[in-house]
Amino acid sequence: MKFAILLAALCGVAFAQFGTDNCVSSQFAACNSRLSDFWRTDTSTAWKDLSSLDRITQSLIVSPYTIDSWVNVCNGFSSFYGCLGQNQIRNCLGTVGLVGSGLDLNTAYAYQGFLADWDFKCGVGFWTMYERKVLTTCVESTYVNYQQEIQAALSTYSTATTQDPNNACKYAQNLMNSWQSTYSKGPCRTVNPAQAGWIGCQSAREWSNAQFRHCKHTTTCASPTTMDAVTRVNAQTGKTEYETLPFYQIVDNKAVILEEASWISE
Image 1 (tube, helix red, strand yellow):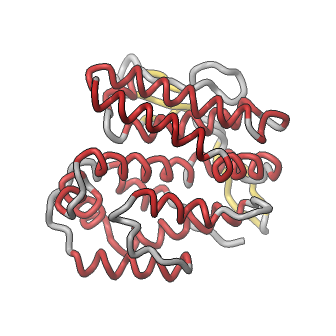
Image 2 (tube, rainbow, N blue to C red):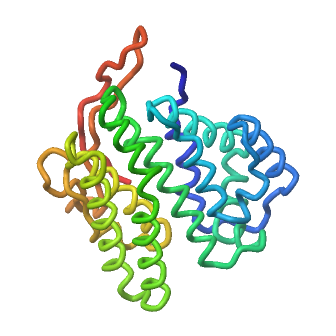
């Protein structure tokens, strides 16, 4: 199995929050065509209609829900970001660039939430599932088959934060709790509900942090093993930190621990 380590490429999304309107449309179109070829699907409307991009990623996660499906989605994003480069990631996928492409502000934030969520799914979230075949299967099944519950919670969050942005962090935590419940009570309920719930919660946290970055200081997810908070604010640096799971390296087609679990800052 071949896959890319995506953190470096995807970090560009995290820093693309504002950007400029200097997106080179010809380059963006070429990179989107490359993404289409990689995923072997039509992505012509993917950056005008978020539901289209969402449906594409769902369609790529196929039964029997092995890690290969997840890898395919992640490597597609990696190829797309690599084609764009850091400057164009910022210019095209930043808030200003997305609005400049014709999207309204709320939709621009939704795209950034979606991409931040996949940043997590292809980073820490990926390694959480890797080599846990049963967990991989139930998490992927939840993502594909529980979209009604996931989208209902997201719709409630979006409406609430639009009407009452001063309490955005409360609504973000509600979204996190809802996705955690969906992932822990769905197909993963008899496998590893705490670990699956953490994946759902952290996905929602990354989504909401893309728009309301200040909420990362107050929103928390329960640890997949202890149910304690896996986020904290370092008293000395003032930075938010979260606990990673062990980092793996592929050696002779097997994953071995390269780095032990640790606290890292965002």
